Length: 200
Picture (cartoon, rainbow, N blue to C red):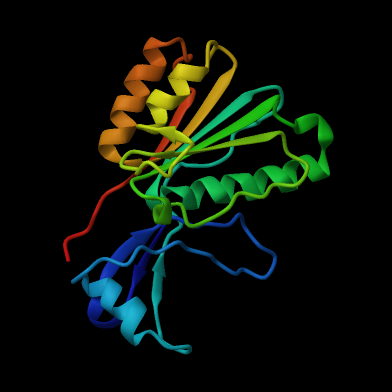
């Protein structure tokens, strides 16, 4: 992730939503927060040519060697950003070396309402299974309901070859790690990037 410092020293942390690019371009998924100072800047005042300072990159959320693994990707809200970056990296890795391909990739992305799932995964050449999950869906929703870690455990009998990457709220990460380790996920195969809400 990066710390972006805007006008007046306003600072927020954002995970990159793309793998490293030859042109150095960075992509972010930024949620609009009512009354948020940085949201006000991004959605009301930001203009091409504005001076922003960048502090980073930071963190340890990166793709480990995927060959032969069952990759499990868990995300909630804009926590999909670093998961998308991992998928970008996987596409490039497998394109360069087919032997590096994971055995399977399962992405579970959760939100409250359908509008929260604002991006559509498209990963050519990867064995990706995508499960959208909503916790507060109405009767029109016919996909998975609940929390991403619960949905995963309902349909995944064997975690011994899994490598889990999870990004979202601290509460989701804590409960997911505890539940998956108890269900047989080997120690040190749970990698997390916690999102912490900033004060307005």
